[in-house]
Image 1 (spheres, rainbow, N blue to C red):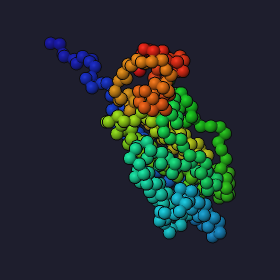
Image 2 (tube, one colour; image 1 turned 90 degrees about the horizontal axis):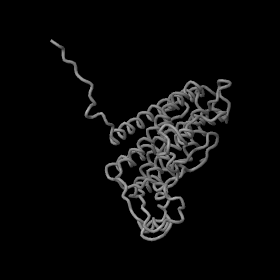
Image 3 (cartoon, rainbow, N blue to C red; image 1 turned 120 degrees about the horizontal axis):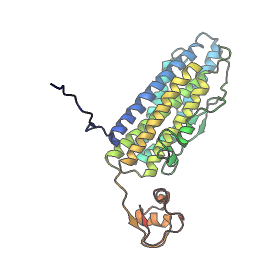
Image 4 (cartoon, one colour; image 1 turned 180 degrees about the vertical axis):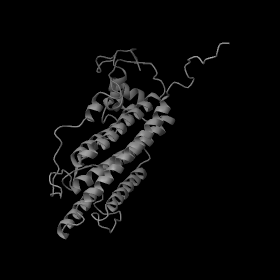
Length: 331
């Protein structure tokens, strides 16, 4: 009697939906950045621990530098900070930094009912800090058209193109030095490691806000493709800077594990944005009623001429954006 063997069949649920990809991306973003912050906190503790037994005047200087890092985000000291020494208790710095960032996040959420507008307020409140001075280096652009499709849905795969090139380590590694460190030859400084931790915390906070916005948009589409790209591009730009700060400030043994988690989060954010774009209703074919250009057409269709770039991108067949023939079919 022949023994029955199951035949090879395609699983009914074998296809991967945009929603399942989005759920996996959300999980990857959360876990990767949590792990990166955990590693960063550990290195901050080790670095500050080297200063615990130094002279009082040197220890006070380190304390002043660390307070200065937080003052950039909370110049008015609206958040009550710990009375504990950051050098003796590094966890106090971590807790104060988190309290300040969470406070700014709460303020941004209540500042506007618009997701994109609230994200812009949050991003403005969380600039890139200097590794060597108590000041902000730059603010991150927000809004539709701030970054472009190469950060999300470029012509190449999700793991290549401009976005991944941005996440490659630059050479040489930037030097970081404000005060000497106990271990001669070490690139670590209390300020550099502290700023790197804050940069990772800012990236995690904005990634959380962008992820929640994109998840909500998949359930009820309201964002334009440009706005989706703007959210993802902002977070990926932050992860890019966090990656390079990690390479500059953390010891060599910690650079790779932290950077790999940042790259994982960056890829997941790109995949989440792609899923949000793919979950949108199919594009409708329209015809241009009159000869016009993309700016005029955007005004006629949406009442918003700034969406001209969006129309241009999804209609590459139009060679001259300044002339669209009457009755030409467009998406």
